[in-house]
Length: 356
Image 1 (cartoon, one colour):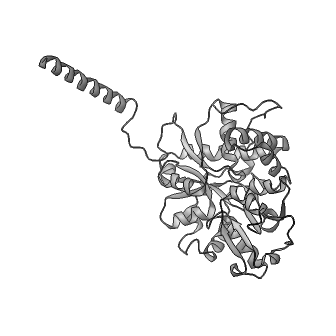
Image 2 (cartoon, helix red, strand yellow):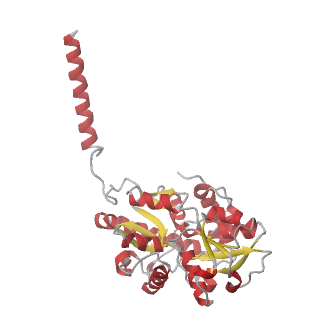
Image 3 (cartoon, rainbow, N blue to C red):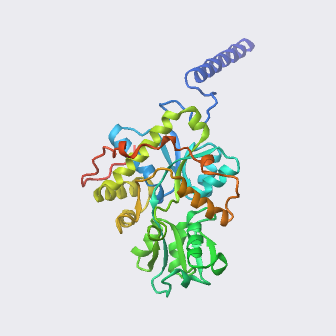
């Protein structure tokens, strides 16, 4: 019996040793992975929320699958900003779409984050109840306005609009609210105005109780809310992959803006495969008007970010220690003249294929 036990133990140890050596040498079980250091065959994760500001993330993934047969990254949908931020801080997502002021604040706090491209231009609005008597910023004096959170550019948008109207933050009541909750709050008149990324603003129009006070494109031209950011180690360890990512996002953005047919196709396959929303929401905000949100002209321009910096300091989001050169890396931005739209030919009126 003792001989059998010894033989069994030796066999088990030998099997464990061989398995461990195979895992270490061939499967890289114990290899320490820094974000961006994955093998080319492995996908890295990108965080996104189901908003139009992040639309190029799922569009790029879908087009890669249809044109090349596979995507080089794995888009990961989050329900809110806290979860998305924590995933990036933990290294779970070495790349993410994130609020521009949040990226600035994280960099100021010592987080190795770099903005490498924009997510969009414009794409937000301030909505009021259709029955209200609010028709200009001054009419919001003493009213409640909901914004996503303290790091959102919608909050800075309100600061900017107040300043232009000769008002201050003391003239209104600003409340923070998750964007998906905003339509119901406006419907019930729990708040007087709401502002967030689409399609939640458009939802109030479709459902018949919301009215546009103003679109961001009309009061803050080329408005930026979200950006594409990566961990600095990603850049240090795999610049080529970061470049392919930015090029793909840029090409997809140009494809979206190429025609209304492309926009409607994007609304269908993104709504079904990524956002879990009714396509009519994205179809509405991508077409009424067509320039409500755009996905070209996404280069990193210092004056745009400096205006956000000034407003962020005024709003108490950042201090005075962070500058454009600290939190951005514009070396990946493709030349506009050399950038081509993705080669995807669209759905051609057919069914939306599922994600692979």
